[in-house]
Picture 1 (tube, one colour):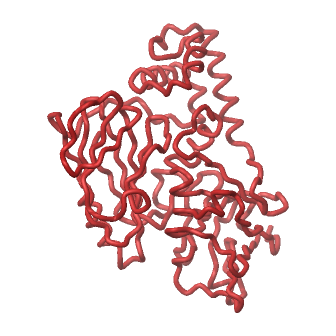
Picture 2: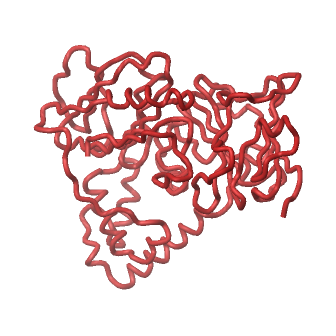
Picture 3: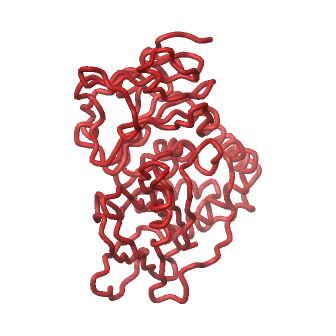
Length: 390
């Protein structure tokens, strides 16, 4: 705990650490344990580069940020402390109160092409944690995690042990008190012993888990039109919107709040047919109709089953405003071709986003989205199927 794990190259199909990864930024990740006292974080001068350190509490609520949009790009020192801590803060140090003792910090640093990679790697190494009123920053923590959704129902005792420990070490927000009381009736909670659960309780728990896993794998409605939907609409907290938080966990874990980043997703075309890489699609952004952001936007295609990137012949895993040599229409519009095969049309070939050969989905990322996106008034381009290749 309390140490960085950095990615040193843009993520590609060889990376399997996180689902629905972006390939525009380098990631830095740290699990923080604030139960023994605060931590100091030194941040270097980032110049004009977009970056964000997203802070998620133990329940993945994106409660705070350090970065371009919120704290600027200048150098600074930040003190992060858990609930209940009181103490004197050194002059010039900015304070971030964290709602749970365990916090996940996810850094994203924009990389402007391969030639920029070494500069970003050097910046990553200048983000340094230091102890404050405690003996050391880094601490070992025993864990019992790593269960995939399909495994949960097969081992309900282990699942209950993990949940019980989590609730004891990171008490949930007051609005969850009713839920905590209800699950205590089936032998789960901060004061419960999973090994004391009855056979009937374990059978019911396993059945409930399987029902939830099946529900989360179902299709999502196209509430934005054209095939698009917004799976993550959180600002600072999911609150009691447990189904939404559960949907995010296996598919978009680590998602930031909508003011920082929006993830607009599609797994079907404009008329509701599932996307398949053997078919050909086009997105047409009309003149003046490109996404509106304060930082940048990009589109990425992912394999539907694994939720990961898949290799392609040109090594292009995202396409957006920063993609070189895009060919715009004479009126300023932009057509983006999406398929597993290279388009025959020269313009579409320049604007080609390769897709996996099988079922896939798209994620349109909007970093620092403008109000038209936040207010849901932006008109997203319909995903038009040009031809069937199957």
